[in-house]
Length: 268
Figure 1: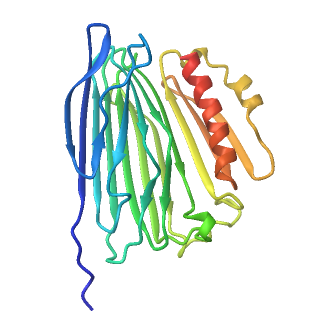
Figure 2: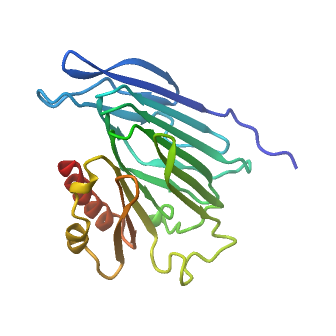
């Protein structure tokens, strides 16, 4: 039987930032639908450029691809915000949706990537590759959330496959590699040592020369841990900190992640 055919969307977004006249500007933008970026927005005299990333198609469908590249020149300060959750629709053709994100930060640059949710629908197939390359004195604060599916519709781990690789390089030295590989039809994710009762996975990564100023033990003691919500924080080599959450309820976890994210952003 022939696979159903459809037009494949290949979104591209290339953003370059640099300081100009006291503010971080975005002099170069290349966008190919369905990916789009807003213009720079500023809060008063704060030189940080806030840019919203949008996906105009409403989600990724079998075989779609998104490629995002962001480069910050030395001393740039940028906040990137995803406008909405990334929805991965069913793979009726059997093809995998692919998203690559490549980030480069120059000396003294700062980037904040605000976390949003990745939602793989029933029979979805998704692969994500994220690579952060930063100068030794640059700062990056990065968050991500993975959902089990459309929980309110009863879709819980009904997708075909979800595979992501996340890498952080500081001056070409790999300091962190995190891989999530779930195939619910092949592996019982509720087993002991896998996700058990958890459905949502949240992560925050911080790399900064000021990471030494973060009292990991003090923050860990304030982490909200209760039935249905687990959390942990650890200090890595290379001035890095990683926080991870496993939760039953998305909103409880997301509010806690926002609190910790804002706290880390204020410290560094």
